[in-house]
Length: 224
Image (cartoon, rainbow, N blue to C red; front, side):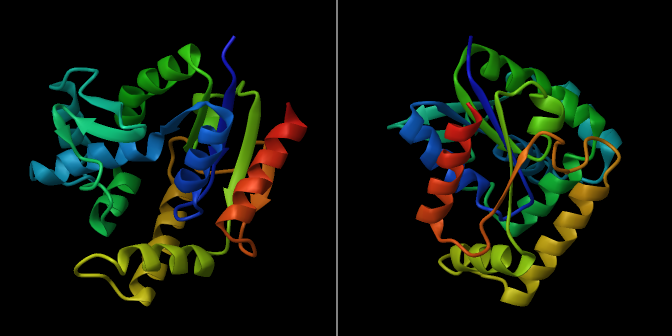
């Protein structure tokens, strides 16, 4: 039997960074579901389709092979592919981030990616993060964690990441994007972001990365 750990939470909470580090310490496979939604948004934007246009998004996805989006590992690092294109770096922009929030509200998109996520979890010991892992994708996960931090702290962390890139938005813009995405994720009709009833709350507003990693490892240890 595989062991499944589900980590949900809002944008910028550090889910990917923390889950990646924890999975390495436990020897589990890390599954970044957010990257899959980002890759869908990237594909739509690349092909001139609005991520908000459900009909055209569905038409585009229905023309693709079910394994068009995939996760792979290169030198131990997870990479995201859209077809044969490695989009790992291309999906980390504010535009794609907001687009991911838009496409994730489309039921067909969630259905398209659902089978891929479940099959990975069924075959491996995984730490999977996203918005609806503990509530929808892996409702029977062995451990469920809701990872969060204040909007201001999350915006500051995201701003520092983007500051290293060209055309960096202002902190105020990043904060506004974070708050808008929170609203979108929590109010969408399909699988809205929320804490599962049996999930453990982990607030990392007042701890650094190492402290957050220790916190999650401690929760997993006590929950198993």
